[in-house]
Each structure stands twice: as structure tokens, then as C-alpha cells.
Image (cartoon, rainbow, N blue to C red; front, top):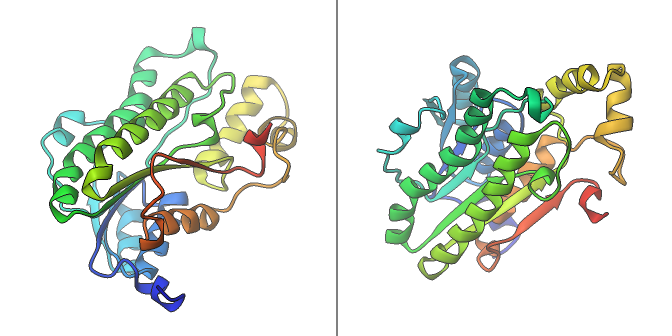
Length: 254
């Protein structure tokens, strides 16, 4: 495949991206559209989703991924599935509301399982498929006060590997991308949460908490994550499966 072919290496492929209305999901949508994919974009924010869908020529799907019963009946005709949707809550375990814990795990682990389950029959029938799970450095490391997020991302890592093992004989790959802190609305909200939890000013949070283990002292840009996703769903990545790719400025190198 020539370098110019990379611009159209998803021509004829149908891709679903969750959490697509902003941040990493929106950047992934633009990346895959640029590679020629036909897109379905999922999010609960209908207004933002409609604007992005119009921009990239995609089909919007307004959906609540915590509605597991509805997801359990789905069958998806997608060739590429990017499980990106996520939420966060920062709290000590003893103060962590059980209902909030369950919601985070539902959206970030159970929903990806159900979407993979819905997509695999079509992928198997075509003998080709790509699953990319947007995990996190927190899928490989833990941080205090993030019990649900860390638990869900660690579970997603295992789910991704099982999908790789089962999908391999059918031409389906499954991988995780593991960003550190990315410049997204989710991270921007965390700055305020972390400042409140640790009793420090918001201007201190990035340097003294979020990026303390990173060799590169800046936030990752959504487009940098999207570029990695774009490679993993392309033809050149056919032998990459069951892997977790960090993009965290060196955080997990320690």
C-alpha cells in the first residue's frame, strides 16, 4: 500500500465511534472520515453530535450507553468499532456512591462488551474487522480517588484481549489505546474535581498531580490519539492484536 492509499484505506468500511460528540471521539471521527470510512457516530449529546455528523457526512446515533437492556438486543453491521465513550468521577472509596460506580462501569465496560457482541457476527461474516477500545494509562496504572474509572479501564483491557483471541481466526483484531491526560472536556472537569479533593488550587493540579509522572509535561491532543486509532484500524495493522498502545508522554514507562 502506498502512502497515498492511506487516505482511502477505509473506503467501503462502516465504522461506529462512541462518545463521538467531542474530544477524542470527535477527533477519531474526523480521522476515519479522512480515511474514507462510512461513519455512524454515537453520543448522548444530540446537538453536538448532529453538528459533527453534518461536518463529516456521518449518521448520528443519539444513545444512552447506560441502557444495557437496549444494547443487548442490537446487531451491528459495522466493520470498525471504536469504543470511546467514558465518564469520570473523583471521590475516596468510602464516599463513592454505589449507583455512580455502577453507572461508570456500565458505560465503560458493559456497553463496550455489548457493542462488541453486536458487531462480531458481521465482522466474522466478512472475514475482516477492527475493534479499538479507548482505554487509558489508568487501564495499566491506578490513581487514588478513581475507583470506578480504574476498575472499568482495567476490565476493558481484559475484554479487548479476549476479543483479540476469539477474533483472530476470523480476521478481526482488537486493541487498546492508552492515553494519559488528553485535552478534552472530561479532563478539564477533572481539574476542578482534583483541586477540590486535594485541597489545592486548580493551577497546581496539572503540574503536581496529573502530569507528575509524565516525562513530557503537556496534555496529549485528541488528534494525536486519533492518529494512532486510524493506524490500528487500517490495513497495515493486520498483525497487531491483543495489544495496548500507550500515548502518555512516558507516564507508564516508570
